Length: 185
Image (cartoon, rainbow, N blue to C red; front, side, top):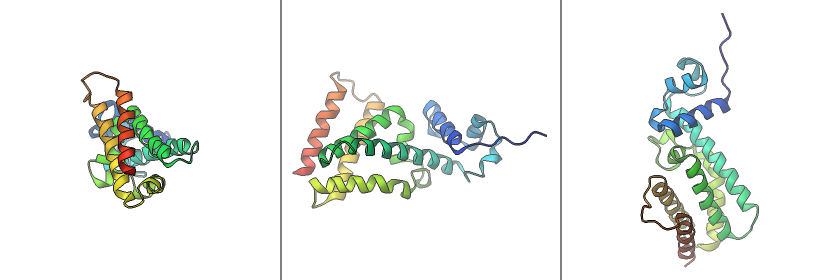
């Protein structure tokens, strides 16, 4: 009898993300992921107790990807406005590469399917630090405003919501500038 195949965490997350992007988040099941990595579904219980745990693995991976992108952009400047602009651009880049997985960051099908709170600490710390420099009176509301605008723009872009023509990249940059000015007002 052959030894059971071992699944690395990277292979597992990759399979979850591929299924999500190809077929949608609803297609991520214990069975579909097990088939993608070449094991039987019960073998996945060593890594995930249920579908929500699988989705959380992918959400945490996306947060790590976003955190690294934001950190790389922030390393090039000390200007809080540029850090915030880089954060919005990093979110847009992630949403362009992985729209279904990005949805898990803000609209997971259940709270336990979204990113773990610990995975969000670095992003939230950096975001609140930067936004505090331009909106010291209420940084949490300012951070929420920027995040909601950026995610809303990305969602509309991914869903074909900008059908009026024009340059969507320019519209993103213009909107970002308006939001940043508003936060500082």
